[in-house]
Image (tube, rainbow, N blue to C red; front, side, top):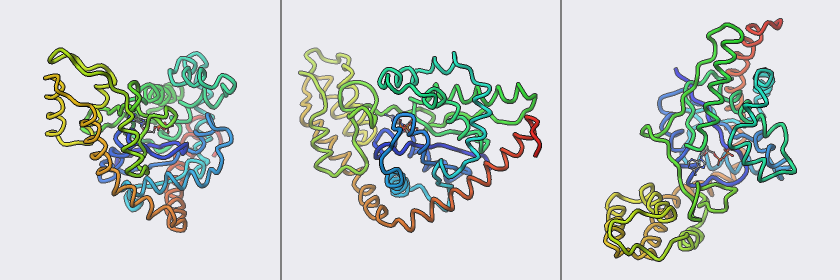
Length: 328
Ligand code: ADP
């Protein structure tokens, strides 16, 4: 069966961007593929060198994975740091990754700008660790959001390069997978850019209804169109994108018509958007609250997932050692 791998860092709760960019794809893929979904705790050290209570953060994401419907009977759900085999592949990939190409990665440049006092080697080699996570299982598909495109290109390059250097056809080149073939970028509520945990513009799956309403009502808008059928400024387009994601087509069309006829009232749009988000997240939130206290269950899920992931990764490492020329 073809293999799928993806992970999310435990640096905060899951938000709508994570759900529609990643988790929704996980749910679809677990039905048909051999899936490995992990919690990228090592990766979080690139930006959070002392990530507080790492166990609690990992459990939080695990509870959210499960509440969203990721099924441990179907997919291996594991914690990155439980599968040490990945580190060996990370080392081999790093030996064939070059400073120039790593420095050119946009997310590296962005992080280097936002944390100038901590431009660490882990940050620089984020793409090789990500590549190791994925190709250690010889994955063919990676469900990630649009923001990960460049990292995916790097990942394919490292897989290809390994094959070329050692003269083998060993690692497949994994493709990005998106729901309905179109990568989703969920916008934030602050008028520009994507929704993200570090951006402070996110709605979390675990947010209670009042928090969601308050956040949506505060979303950036403008004074409204004065000319019919005028193009939408980014902040407004973002609200419509959110409507498209969580609301019915009728609702979207209704507000779109109101916009095009200059009769829009952003307050009404936001109220509707907030209610539609609440309707979407409430059942997930309830499940999170149900799962999060069951640490015994979560630990069992993580242990079973780690065992499956280790088995798959160990096989690859044995073969990779042989290919590179290390003694078994
Ligand atoms: P990490 O730090 O683990 O990359 P992110 O929250 O940035 O955490 O991303 C985790 C996953 O969620 C990735 O697959 C990413 O593509 C997806 N994702 C994050 N934010 C968005 C967004 N605003 N729109 C679409 N996908 C997103």
